[in-house]
Length: 306
Image (tube, rainbow, N blue to C red; front, top):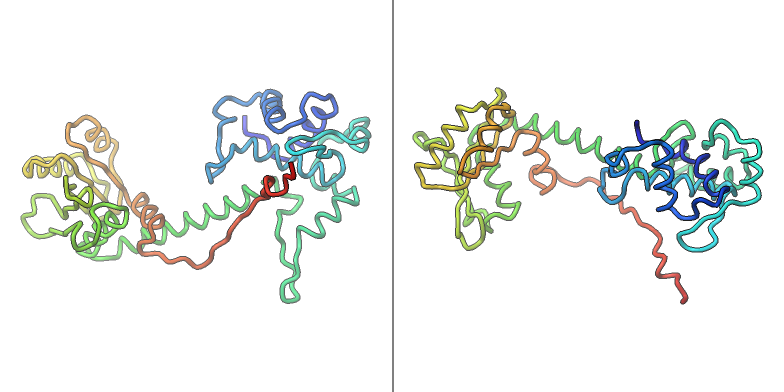
């Protein structure tokens, strides 16, 4: 079963509050998970940020919207309880509670008017999801970020497929240096990339002291890399008495190739095109920031007078 949306949680949450079964989010999250028959894996599903479970996030927003409509009230930090208005709703409950239903209460309409639109240069800008959407603001923001990132990764990979093999070999060494291997670009790595290199395109120091080296193979191509190519690279590593290697390609690896590296003594890491693109985004290689949005939360400790 899919994790319920925040609007699917509002009526069950109000019922839990009305029955005095839940007055805090951890308890409500557990009971709602039980009510919807969620598995352990579903309850543990995290938001893209990895900071909070999806169920906790949606439960929190469900309680927030119920409070804004005057159906719940917050008696103290971290707790909620039902109001007389909330009890009246439960006497003749609707099939479900969503933003459209809550908009029937003046406090919620006032909240939407103040929080959902802002005049910028004479134009109204929508800031929160419409009543027809079922994602929380956190999920909408993180989902949009993930979509933008996915599109950027596709653009980066497309450009990687267009560069020369020599440029790609230099790029992968540069990426590994930026990731923290070695130190400076000049001292940490060097590109070999010449005929007779024995299947090795570059070497890089594993750390700033050069206690060990990592050998690199870089393939800028579109065909799937199979086991024979990986075996050739491993053979080159043995020829250098090397213990570690990274095989990087703009394409992908066959299942047989990935299975092979999991059963050999030499440590070989396989990085496909999408993985390389995402590492470039993470470490600012070949990309540049265009906007930064800082999401803040209330610092409850600041307002604690105790």
